[in-house]
Image 1 (tube, rainbow, N blue to C red):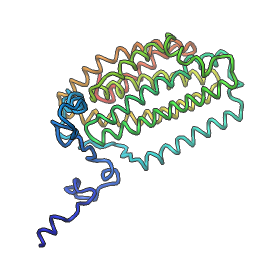
Image 2: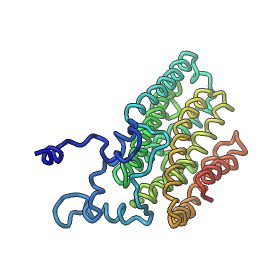
Image 3: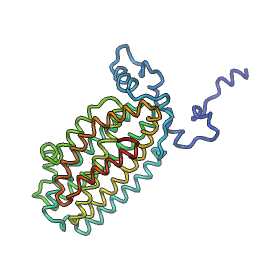
Image 4: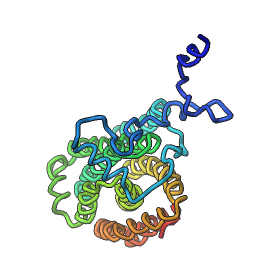
Length: 330
């Protein structure tokens, strides 16, 4: 009777963490070992024979060149959960809303030169396309990552990228009310598809969107594409805004950079975790060597359009190099 009762005794929520000597944190309880589709390595999903879904996950996740004995052992250094993420970004959005309201009351858009308004229509408001591409890659990684603690990084980063899309869209509408003859809200797709400044980023983003292996997609997004966007579109364009009296753009981009810096810290931990397997370091560096030339090309084309900043390209490349080196990569 007692044996039967012991057998039927319900497990605690964190029973898989019971070997720890201390009570698990909120992060560990709600974030770890959540993927049911990693339990059976030969058949991720309990569906019919020949299901394409199983083939996809076997090929692009389970059989990825990047391997680890226990992906579930990874931990986010920020230890974000849904509750704390919302607290954190509620503060960020309150700050951004305050900036938008304050500069609107001051008549910021009426005071900037028309030449700069035209530059914003070419170089800023089309940024929603690159941010949306990053959001889609993050959403794919949310589905494909081999551990819930890794998926969570992509989940919250996808939300950040959506916030960046929203900021750009809001400013597009706001700028269009002051500069009706510049093409805000009308020509962004044309600039994204045809303007020389964007073609490097468009090529990189479109090719990144069809990288199916979860690990290579992670490296392309986090180690190559995102640092390039931060270096050129957020950092250097923000500096150009300050040069042209557009303090609002400079501050908005700085706010986005705070998100990007958190992403970089999380990426550093993930890369260090993966490269504990020495073979993975060679694989990751190979992917960086393959993709980085496209990022360099994108930054060169974009920064060439920032005519107020003659050192923009050099500084942007130095930023990307520093970001890679912080991850232990060349």
